[in-house]
Length: 84
Image (cartoon, helix red, strand yellow):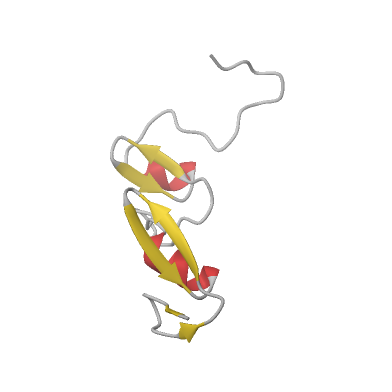
């Protein structure tokens, strides 16, 4: 059995997450998200999807990035728009 690093539960179905050279042990995805998900620098929510990055800053969406002064970030592009 392994102990979850977030809640301390000793659980027989715990799993490991290997990230940036470290190994983390959790008993559920909720605990993994709580421990590892970046936090939006505008609204404070956990970024559990793709989110957006501007420089060294993380945001949950383009709206929050723009509110913090990041220009040119959009949540999606118009159908048929080519990106290169």
